[in-house]
Length: 573
Image 1 (cartoon, rainbow, N blue to C red):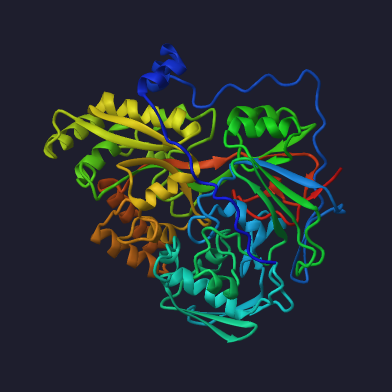
Image 2: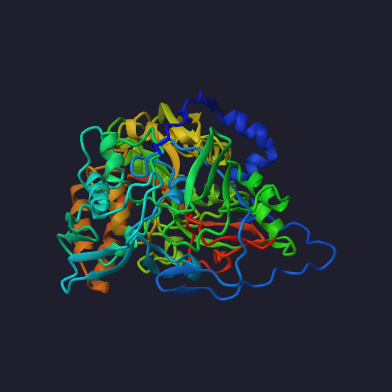
């Protein structure tokens, strides 16, 4: 089987929306109420059904048998699982901006999170076991035997080495989005065909957790070499539970069961069909009406409806390590001036933005460390801090003074806010735009493009401000800060640079004492509040919904949100 080269999914025209159009859409009364902060924090729940509904039977306990994932109950074979969420991708390369939640089903990692215990543990994947040296700097992985890629090529340690060397030391022309996450790795070497050794410059307690992220699938060395290490236009063969069948741009992906999968018990379903449903409300509707079997995240309104229909669907609310934010291009005026960025940090109400989006997704009032992380600032403390507090009187006065110091006493004109089409552009972007104008006299035009194109614009630096959402597979601040806020970080698209922050991050990365690390992280968050690289709106909860026939994923027992692999799923039909 040769690597598949499908039709380029990307060309799309841009369009724009004005603040006036936004207010017309909402209606003058609704718009002013929203922006004044008078709307309820969450929408009123829909009316419950007239008759009591019988909930689904709880799933039987899952197991971990001989190094293999095994769901509970008596799994049935066959059928097609249909999912509903956005499935466009700017690239087919997991490590160069490809949509991992779509592509990951065709690949395996070295290790992965345990699907059958609610992602609470990390378990073997292509590595059947691993050992860590006493000093915490050497990780030795023993690989499974008999694994093959979808094109029939045997899997070996050379593939692991080629994959991670490309991430850590990308060849010319390769944009490794995760380079800085693995900056602590000094070497990756094949000890023999079934053994790989990672040597770190310093211990990282989260290293195995990091390897379990959905984006870190293993590619074939042969395929990488055949394509000069650039797989952006190629759906490369993996070792995963599903094989590529079809991709129709902005419509769906179709994958089929891999009959040669190294775990002969899995997968149970015959076909995975991922439908492109970008609107959250449409996702929930698709599940409720049976057009889809599950969605990782639906609109709050349809989630509430699903909560009242336990006879057909189940729902959950999961902490998510992703946030909404407005990224500043710090290489260009006026956002090269930290006083301008801090003024926006102070003057724009996060509470109003959270309310503006309440029908779609729950955004939490957070700082730079995600909600639920042991180093996160408590919510009651955040609510009293400048920039985060609800009463903006003092913050707006301070912000206007900062703009005057920066030479913008009369405000700023001619700046652009880039956003992806969908609810973010329809609700968050105009609300942000309105508060910039009312509180700081900053006049911003909104430019809207397709979601799959947003990352390309960010990488190219074609923006002044961009509204986006980005997450991470673990809650610890170190890997995300090295990607996003360190000088030269591999996803630091805004060009942010603060040597004092870099020095603090070095200490955070290497500190093992919990309380000392807590103090360093607090200092780092204070610094980011004073010199913000982004306007951080807040980290979120995700709202999955699935039909009662969907079993084997422990969706009712997950510790947090992960848009990831599903090979243990089975359909009780």
